[in-house]
Length: 377
Image 1 (cartoon, rainbow, N blue to C red):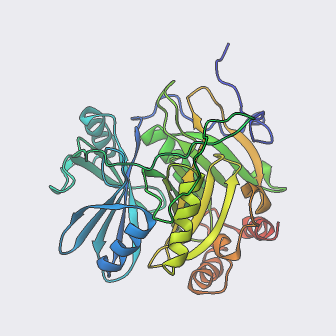
Image 2: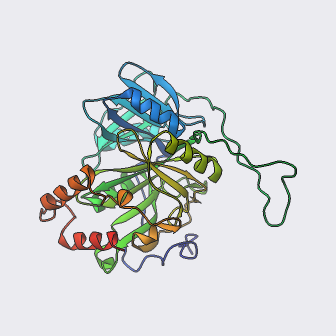
Image 3: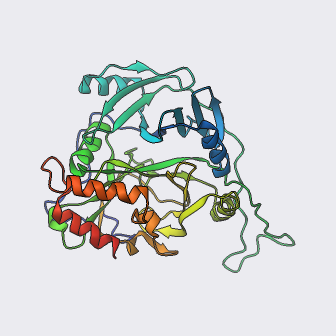
């Protein structure tokens, strides 16, 4: 008798059908504990730092050609930005449980364990996933001490009175980022990349999405969490979706509560930054969300109140639709969906024309029809 069960009663259409992807493997090489940080290159570190502070990060390191932005909780920096000729996402760094796991992974991949630069400390195994994306797995990094966090507001709810003779006045200030939550990546080799992360890093799937009418062809998006046994982990640390090119989609950072998120959004708007989509509550993951564009156009998310799952939950399955991205909130915007006229949508269109008939990726004409249906749903 298994202790695993689906979470169709929580937010998914149903569990897997016979023969569908299980969303985990029995004996992965290692099981990573978390997402440590994300690495970017940008030509303007000053602009990156200004936006970072407006978004709610603190600076933990600043050199001539490198910037580290951190959340308030103890741990590693959340974002590492190095000076580069153009703005690009370099890749994620995942946290191994210990050095022994790092050595085991390095031996399995045939990759040497290397020391990280002093501002980060610790060790890394650097490799590529099947999409060609750079992936780091790290251990024993320097631990930054905790900083002050925002205190969630006290609410008068359910007929109770917990706040008397006191008003609610959340300050219009940056929403203090507490920690990095997840990153979403698009790939032309979704199934190969998914299996790689499950087999090599021990991640497990919380939810699968599939194109409407194409379930028999398999999923096209997965929300993937760390397997910590009975210790709950974020609903997704990594999300992956099939698309016409391999690229960064967005990353998400936890804040204290809805008021911190909303007031922080007002601060960003007053500072001249552009909201992409929000405020709303997601279905997969349940987070209250608010999406913004940073100084170079990267999509970043404030979130609060996300789901936490242990290892007993099997994946949920649901069709992918634009309207199914949120329980409540405004409709998903063209900017968020990547169809707003501009540089990114043109790059996506060029990739569709270049890749849809190639045999070395999974994004074919049938999948293109499914994606177009999502955009119009």
